[in-house]
Length: 156
Image (tube, rainbow, N blue to C red; front, side, top):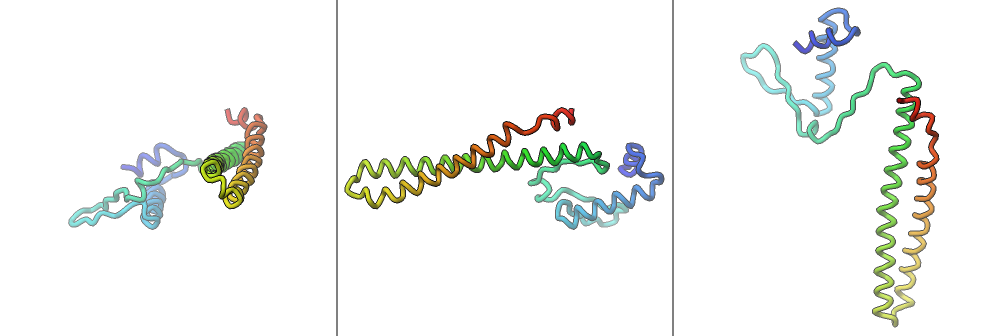
C-alpha cells in the first residue's frame, strides 16, 4: 500500500519493485539508527515496525533530494543565521550570570567592607568577563542586523 502511494506521488520510480526496495532500505536505515523497532510477528506475512523512544524524542525536518543552487545558499544562510542567533542567546545567558555575580560581589562588599581586598578581585574578574561577553554580543548583533536581505527575498 505505501509502495503504491510512493509510486503515485513521485516520478522517481518506474516500477513497483524498485519502490519496494527503496522503502525497505529506508526502513532498515531507521532500524539501524534506533528510530524504528521491529515487532516480532508469529504467523504473519508482513512485519510491523513501530516508533522507538529515540524517534519520539527527536524533531525531524524534511529536505528535498533535488536542491537548486539558490535554495542551497538560502539553507546555508539560514543555518548561519540560526547558529549566530543560538550563540547570541548563549552569550546573553552568560552575560546575565556575570552581571548577577557582580551584583552579589557588590552586595558582599557592602556587607563586609573589611574584606574588600579579597572580594574586589572576584568582582573585577566578573566585570571583565561581562565586558568581554558584551563585546561578543555586540559583534553578533551587528552580524544579525546587517545580514544581506537579498537572500531572504530570493527564497520568497
